[in-house]
Image 1 (spheres, helix red, strand yellow):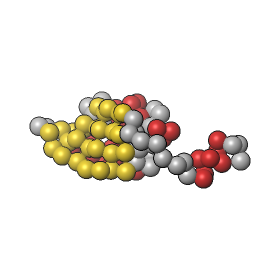
Image 2 (tube, one colour):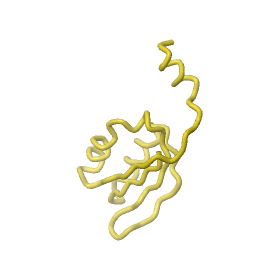
Image 3 (cartoon, helix red, strand yellow):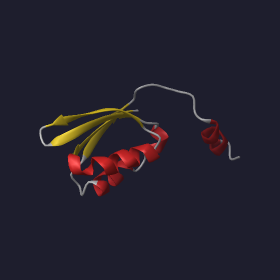
Length: 85
């Protein structure tokens, strides 16, 4: 998924750390007025519940948008989990 997160700069570290835990690849960041726009790519399977988490990390001040980007091979650990191994 292509992901864009808009957050106040003071919460940027928390948002980046959470995205890293979700196996997201951060593409870049740029300032927009009083916010920072963070662009990333992340697997859809890791993004469930993100809206609640990003609001919690930013005291309700961050928002995000997500759209399909591409299909890719799933890691073996994900395949094993799907197959119940």
